Image: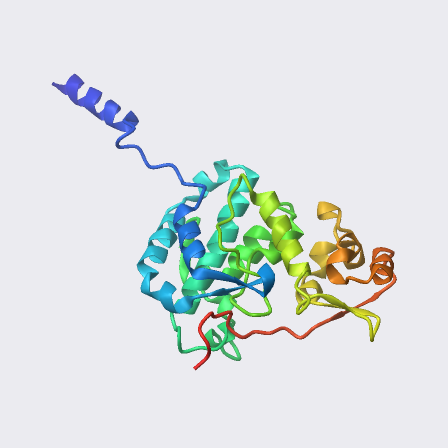
Length: 272
């Protein structure tokens, strides 16, 4: 009888029925929510979120967040680079939406969720990889940790629910498509003349404050970006239609200035 019990326990330990479900790296739950509730505007250069209808399906978002929180550090450490980075980008964006929904519709900006002495990005309101975390933890301790990913394009992928932000895509980031998705996000953001443009009157590049806050990330040689001028030289055709100006941007001959950041909520619904 004792041997029979041992056999049963051994079988249960290896049974595919009882084994833990593998993590679903396509992030299908999040992907479905994004496809339904994110709307492209400005010829696909920006997006808005229908927070009003998304709030009615908050249980689906909660279900996805529970899946993320259930991932342990040992499991995460076994994943490849693309699986880890897609996981962290999606987690950051999903928890940002969750943070907005905690007070929606009674806010005009994500900054309304903080105070003079407390940043909304420093709130520890969820668990990830076995620790209580904030949004800053994901971005700065995990994604931007030196040597972890060294990927400057994450600054057009993790978004802050604001009009001034790069667009939240209407699809989840996935390991198989990650490089293409990051590149599309960068191209989309640089193509948005409300956020990044050449001003012929001032003869200046007027670009997002993101490139001020994170200039260092674009200047360390990762993805072959060695400076902001180097970055903009590679995408000069997105910043102006003027061939002469494009040539000067390519040569690094145009001064860079930074636009004010629009922190208003990227909401599809008109403000009340």
